[in-house]
Structure formats: C-alpha cells, structure tokens
Figure 1 (cartoon, rainbow over the protein chains, first blue to last red):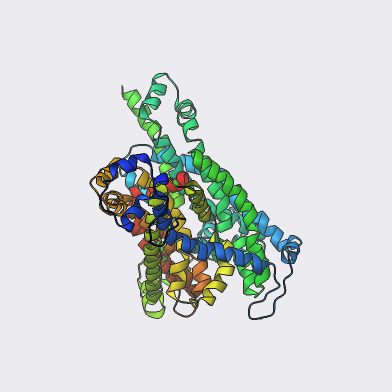
Figure 2 (figure 1 turned 90 degrees about the vertical axis):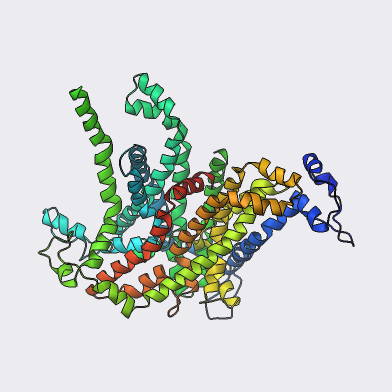
Length: 322
Length: 283
C-alpha cells in the first residue's frame, strides 16, 4: 500500500496520479486527507477494506481452519485430536453413502437442466408477448424462485406425503394406481420427487434469464425476418437464438452449481433418506456433524471445493465475455 | 378478413393462453395448495368424500394456533433483526467495494473483482463446519450477531458486483465536474453518485433482504436453541410433528413466512428482474 514519512506525507504521489486529474484539481493548500483521496489506489484499498475484513474473517480464515479440521480425527466435545493427513478423504472414497452423495448432487444439477431449459424457454417466450396483466403474471410466476426454499419445500412435503398427497388421490380416483404412491419412502421415487421440486424452483430463474436475453434483441430485427417470410420457429433460430445463446449457458452452469450449495430442499423433504440414498454434500456433511464426527464432516464439505473451482472458472469466463 | 382474424385468435390461444395457463398451474399450484390447506378445518382435510382441491368451509384456527400456541411471532422478529442487520452491514460494505471496483483503476483491481466473485461461489455448505467453531470461539453462538456477521459472506459478493455494474452506468463526467469545482472524491461520491445510484442500492438491498430471509443452514447450525430461531428453521424444526393434525398450521406458517419476501419484491419487481438478470449474467 502507501508509505508515509514521519510528517505523514504520502511519498511518490505524483507518478501514480493520472495527468488528467492533475489538471482538474486546483492547487490550493491541501491537507493530507485531501491529497490521500486523490490517489486512486490508496482510496480504492481503503474502500475495499471493511468488506474484505469480513470476507477474510468469515470466509478465508474458516476455509483454512476447515482444511485443518478435515485432516484431524477430531470429535465434537473431545479435546484430543490427532493429525491424520488425508485419511478422512481416503476413507470417504470407499464410503458407499458418499459415492451416492456425489452422484445425487450431479443428478439434481445436471439431470434437471433439460427440463429447466425447455420450460424456462417456454416461459420466456410466453412472457415476452404483450398481453393484459402481463406484469402481474410475471410477478406471480417468479414466486417459486423468491420464497424461502424451506417454506416451499413444506408444500412439497405434503404433496409428496404417503397418506395426504393430492397427487395420489387424483390418480387413485382416475383408477391409474391402486394405492398411494410412496413418493419419499422409496429411493428412486425420492430422487425423482426431489428433482421435480428442484425443476419447479429453477424454471422461473431460467425463464427470466432467457427473457432478459430475448428483450435485448432489437424489435426491427424480428420484423425484418417476419417480412422475409420466416415462420416463428425460423425467426427464433435466426435472430434471438444466437443472441441469447450465452444466457441459457450461464443459467445452466448456475443450475449445476446450486445442488452443491443446496441444503433445505433435501433436508426438509427426505433428510437424505430413505437409507441415506438421497443425500447431497450439505445434508451428508450436516448428518455426519450430528454424529460429532467433525473431521469427516469437514472433509465431506471440502470435497466440493475442487469441483466448484472448475465450475467457477468456467462460469467466470462466460460471465466476463458477456 | 374474418378468416385471418380467427386464425390470429387461434394462434394466440396456442402461443399464449394455453402455455400461460400451464405455467400458472404448474408454478402456482404448491402455493394454492398451501393456502387452501391452511384455511381448511381438520375434519374437511381428512374427509375423503370431499374434493381435496376445493374449500368447503373456512377456518382461521390454524393461524390463531400459530400465534397463540407457538413461538412463530418470536421467530419472525428474530428473522427480521438478523436480516435487516446483515443487510445494512453488507450494503454499506458493498457500496464502497462496488464504487472502488467500478470507478477506480488501480493495481490489483481486476484481480480483487474476480476474487470477490469467487467468494460468491463459496456456498455456506462448504464453510458451515469450521465457521460454527469460529462462531463459538467468538462467543456469538445462539446470538443475533452470529448471523449478522456471517450472512454478509454471501451478501457482500453479490451486492458488490451488482453495485459495481450500477456505478459504471453513471456518467463519470458529473463527478469530474464536481472535482473541478474543488470537491474531494468522497464529497463527489456522497453528493453526486450515491443519489443517482439509489435505485441500484435499493435493489441490492432488497436482494440482500430476500437472501437473508431465506437462509437456512447457518441459521440452523449457529442459532437454533430455544426461541432463538429464524422462521424457516423454526417452522421446519418445531412445526413438523408426528400426528396428522399439524398440516393446517404448517401450511399457515408457510404462507405467512413467504409474505415478507413476496411483498418486498412485489414493490420492485422490475428492479428485481433487471437485478436478477444482472446477477445471472454479470455475477
């Protein structure tokens, strides 16, 4: 940062001040504070400081501390702990629940993307039209994305309930099924149910992202294509298609990242069950912490880091390009 | 002409009203279901002869039970304190970060921008275990401060990027004019840039509010003893019970717990959408 001499004067100010600013600031008697503000880099770091302090104390430090915990055999409530290097990580590779956890996290993220993309595109094309009360509809249709997931999951908890589910009632009434569907008690059904809730929550985000891309397309381009006799689909592929390509891609990357950050949906609906078959990183780590095995729990969480880093680098590239 | 008119009408049905109806049913049904269950007497809820999708009689028992027999109001207050506190803290830090990254050219500026974006991608699920130890070591466990200090870890990266983009849209000439008139950077910022950036700051604030209101994991791990719970955590841990009569009050809590965020964003839905897409495409 900046070095000061004994009088508190900033040294070597001139060489970093840009010529344009030397011109516009009048040369009157200036205090230290005034001159300090003219040095962009000093002021910039001063501005960054409060936020950085919070991020260092509550992200960087716990991150390092977490790596340390994950390399110990620590248990909550026991002072004694041994440093065991990567033993926790190695043991997890052989843990069938952990293997399922990794698989599920990708199933919830990648497996739901085609549905979110298709429904999101449909939603965007609907909302891109002019009709009465369109703003009101748009506000309503965004709700699944706005309300706390823990709370909308409660609705799904009932919709997927073994006894109370209205879905089972209707299907039984129509004679499609003989008895209630065991939505959350069967491993495969539970994963499908979680995917459905996941898609429901993600569609508005995809819809609005794609809508923003569509609205960036100038109207006269569309009109020109229409005059040339293109039908709606040709028009879409020729004009907004290429323009919005990046938006669905970024939304997709976010969708793949979310299950790593997710917790509430699985925690409310299945708690990772039945028989630990629906865990994601967050819930499995939380459950392991509940068994006071904090070293292993930290290792489960930190396994996300390399995967997230790769995804983050890809995401950052596309975001920058935009 | 009549032929053309009916064709247009039919295609409007296919391209607009049909899909719109589908999306309304698909996306709104869980809320509709929560609402009718929260208003339905238990006897109706369990009567298999009635159509479960309709209301035959209305009761507010589930809501009054929530207020009189549970700590729901206390949870709402807790959530409010924590959300407003963390939003204010995060917003004031983010205004400075956003301004510095959006306006100043300095060595390491681009790098810091990328670093802060990466913090946005560090999810609470990755840090909650070591953070729980740190929260305990600082003596913050089960206090409001435990969440007021930790929520900014995901609010600051988000709000900073949003505001950085917003500050860049404000013409720099205005500031230069003020600097020529002898104002210092801070004065120019306070009197020229901040008033113009108010819409951006407001939507960043609303974002922080909804994100804070919706947070679950930190609230569950750092602040969940006795009455010190947030609404999402309190509802999930206290109101889901083992008998069949809890659905009404559970759904009532769901409806009430969604109201603050739904109201907060409905006032600013257009801001929200532009902010969200800024969040989606610019970080």
